Length: 195
Image (cartoon, rainbow, N blue to C red; front, side, top):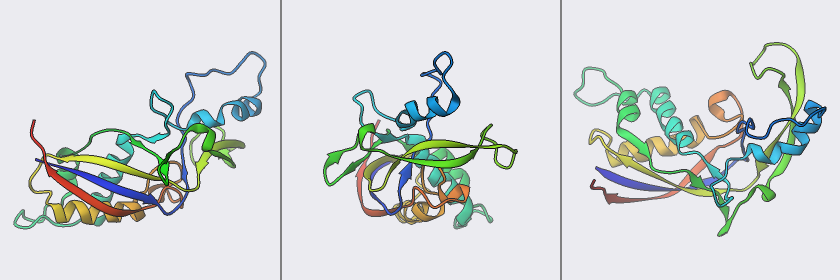
């Protein structure tokens, strides 16, 4: 097994849309007032208050990229790498965001208000204004463990680079038809991993 640290730089704003069920609406508070009060809380944070992108966001970006690229596995009768990414790649932890060495917190977010579907289902009908946190500049390090030797260093690096354009991370990312959450890989650091 191998562990790879992927050094990432955002090339488009990152916008989060974490659920806010843990902070219910106050009595007689309108949806609009509630949204304006809690929009920063839609950003994921560590227990220490550092803004982060959940590990599963990068895992799913890699899985989606493997599906979309459809690269064939040599000598495997037309099999693609998709299932090998699903079962053979683990994202070790959430990725903390920073810019020029400064760790980002919710206070660093800018608000963006969009016209969103009231029930969250695309094309369902009524639209309402909703505000989300946006981080215009961001960097992070993503640590992944490769548990299947079919996923070579070259394949992982190819898919990680493509994931920044094909899938992205966060709200309104390329995978969902949007421009947010795109990134480029600055470098990779590989090491052997033992249980």
